[in-house]
Length: 506
Image (tube, rainbow, N blue to C red; front, side, top):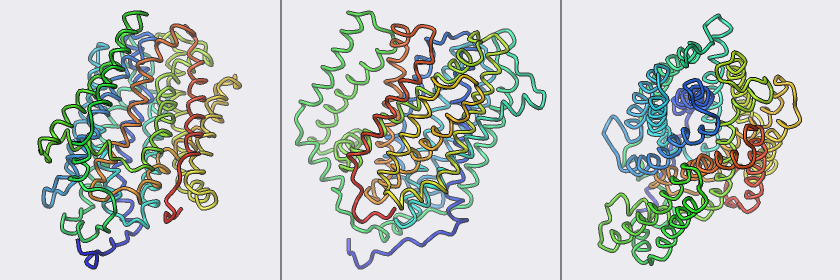
């Protein structure tokens, strides 16, 4: 491309930044309702604490499959006035709203598990293109502002979604689970959340206009990343050694399952290893045959060709999201058992603990919303983005560890402050670091691939945490918070190896 024809993207006003990211406010309401209430719903419908990871495994598995596919497709979509990313916003929002409406009508555990799968897939269809949408619509000088405002909306949406059952209880809505049913506070919250999600996404859809492929070509600054043909040629030149290694590793895990009678969730981990090995073999063969438009070959090739800084950030993402998923699964049973002395899901104390967990989740999300706009920019200017992220992750680790020091459930608010600071940074800093490093023409697929390192740790936690708890800490879910503190600390250590581009502004 002739570099003299390249032009800068127009700067957006605050209103423009608002419109670009407002849909994320609704999407996060849906995620918050899911995160704060699904363990409660599962236990209200008869699940034991030990089976919660297996039931939750649907969510990360769908994210693993959906995000790279949607990213790849949205990079190649153009529907005229309907745009590139916005069709995915709408499709995902409609499906997610339907899932939120049906979830509290679940009368059986299987129905709730299937709806969780559908809900998470739908939320991912909408969410993944939103990450790329910020990069599409903004110049590099506004990436940090765009992702910071997006994080603020995520925090605000999560506050509303998390606290709504508690608010309804305060207004007299029934909070008791009757005959293994779902409390009215949760039921009405999910219905409200579905309407809010759809409305917020439609706001972004109707108030924004995407740049056409011709306009995007003029904005392209000629980055030095390999193009698709180069990546596919590199894929075609690869041997099958690493693919066979993945298959062998999966076979070893299967052998371990049979040899030591490991839990059923571990089958998922083994299956994924084998599936990736087989998929990479197929992708190499497709690349060698010259089928450059094949989606599998392109996704595997882009995964292998990730920029180095993205690979280093992926390690920190892996550990930080492991800690988050441990928290989302276990906070309700931890608070109910260790702080309310009510581990029985049928007891009023358990339902009161569930409402308090919603408040705690609202607090850490509220802290994140404020920190994204006030604390993180100041720290980034003083320390740099990578060091800021490391410091915030350590604050989150301290928050998890403090569960062992606190006895009053209401003082857990202090714990949530540290967790909220880490959450703000997890949602903003990695994307701000990457924004100026990723090739514009592959923004969707690379954002989708980066999100794999959000999903993989969730699958790992769901696969092994139940086995670990049953083996070492039966009926003591409080120890999951120690695991969360340790892996969040590992994420902070991983950030020592991330070097920001010299030209990146804080």
